[in-house]
Each structure stands twice: as C-alpha cells, then as structure tokens.
Amino acid sequence: MHLVSRVSRRVRSLPHIIPSPHRPRRFLHTNYEEKYSDKLRKAAQERGLSVSELKTNVKHEQEEQKRVATARSPAEREPSPFESVRRDSSPVKPLSSILNLPRILGSPHTAEQVSALWTVYHASRSNGTGRGYLCASIPLDLYTKMATAGAKYHMFVVPMQRGAPGADPVAPPPPPAEGDSDAAHEFYLLQWAFHDAPPVSSAGDADLFAPPSTPPPDQPANPQTSTIIFTPLQEYKLRGTFATPYLVLTNYTDLAQSHGVVLLRGEITPSAAAANAASAADRYLLRQADAARLSMAVQKFYLWDADDGSIERAKLVHAFHKTPNQFDWKELLKHAI
Image 1: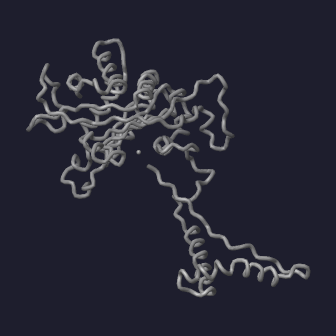
Image 2: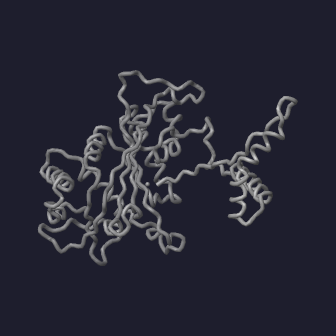
Image 3: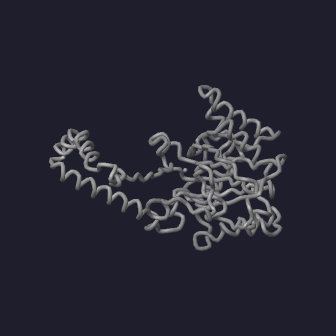
C-alpha cells in the first residue's frame, strides 16, 4: 500500500521597483548588476552563453514552469473544500468514496442492513462476478481483539497448503492428515499497518450544510483503520519492501461506534497479463478461494480464545517475534490454512 507527492515550485522573478522622483531606479539597477555581475558571467560561461542570452533563457524557463504549474491535472491540485476527502495522512481510500455514508446516516440502518449493502456492493464488482474482491463485516469487539494483537505482533508467516494435482481449482484443499509433513505449502508474509482513526459518524453528519458536529467528550472514539497485506514469502525475500503484495485487506472503522461493525474490504492484485488472460481466474495474482483462505488466516492467528488450537497459535505468533531462533516451523505447518 508508497505515495509520492509532487511539490510544484514556481521560480519567481525579483519584484519590480516602481520608479519615482525620490527613487533613482537606474542607480539601484546598476548596483544590482554590479553586485552579481561576476556570478552572472560565470553562470553564462558554464552554459556557453552571453549574459543577455542567459537572462533570456531564465525568463523562458520561468514562463514554462508557470505554464506547467497552471496546467496541473485536477488530481494534483489542492482539493476543493467541498470535496469529501479525509483530512489526515492516511493512504487508505476513504469509505465515503465507496458507500454513500450521508444516506446511511440520514436514515436508520441496522448493522445487518449495513453489512448487506456492503456485500451487495462488492458482489456487483467485475461485471457482477465479484472477482478480485472480498468483503466481510466484523463485530467491533472481535476487531478490537485482533487489532490489539496485530499492533503488538505486526508481522507473521502464514502457510497455505497447495491442492493436489487435478483437484478442484476453486475449492480449498482438504486439511492435511495428522503428521503429514510431505504436503506442499506456500508461505505468505502477513503485515499489519495502522492509520488515523476516522471521526465518529452520527445522523447529523448527513446534513452537508450543517456545521461539523462535536462529539461529546465521553463518547468513545473509533479505533484506527488498519490494512493487512499478504506477500509471497519468496517474493519478499527477493525484493524486500519493493515486493508486490498479492492481497490487501482494509478494515474500515468509520461505523464502528455508530453501528458496532468494522467493514473489511479485500482487493486481489491484478496480474500484469490481465488484458490477455484466458480466463477470469488468470486476471489476478491470487485465486479467489486462496484470497478467502488468507483473509480467514487473520482470524485464525490473531483472534485468541480459550480453545487449545487458539492458544497454540498465539504461542507461535509470540515466538515468531520474541524467540525467532527457537521458532518451530514444523509446528506452524500443523496450522496451515
């Protein structure tokens, strides 16, 4: 999820000196020329120009820079105060660009209705196939538990068992047999990142012309928005931070306090050869079923409860960070997805 911001600098000429009977313009201009004459001649010689030619070129460069700055695309210009954009440094696409939040907040919607809208929206993507996207609605209490663990242990390796030759390419493979260490696995690096928490939404926010509402001082704030990226471990070893993530999960917390849900959105990275792909499944770096399995791995390794399997996985995540030299990879394979 790297943003490169362009800052357009305008080269401004020296302010004009307004002539007056009490201000000898020629004298000031002469002093300026004398003060910088050596530097002007040196700069002109370095470019193979005369001083007058250098001045002409600089003037043309200034005009060109002004023209480029004026012709910047709308995406590069400062946003209008009437545009609905986040005012923080988060690189996450705002939820308001996906859902009509004023409409949701303007009329009563239950958490179930919001979840249904979220599901219908993503099912309509990719010409109604929903391919390339995942979605889910997470109860706030469960998200809080996972995010707390993710903030403490922001990285982990998830083993995915590969299907046998000739198996259904859509259905996930069956769980490995007890003690089966010969099954093929592919490892994915899971990485958490946290971003600014969105303001708490309320029904008053639906009125575009109303002044911004100030939440009560005792009202709980929304939790931080988070992203989780999955990158093949081999890819990460080769390219490091430049490796391409195959799946990006975004947890939107805009409606966490108002509706008690966190909206998860998953985006599978398109393949570079997507335009010439023979089938829809080949248009992405990851199969739809595999992406779903990876998304479930977040719950499997970061939602800890009292059952034995959960405790074992929590110990693995802890050991991965605290005692990496003693990490038991064979034990990890027992919990492959």
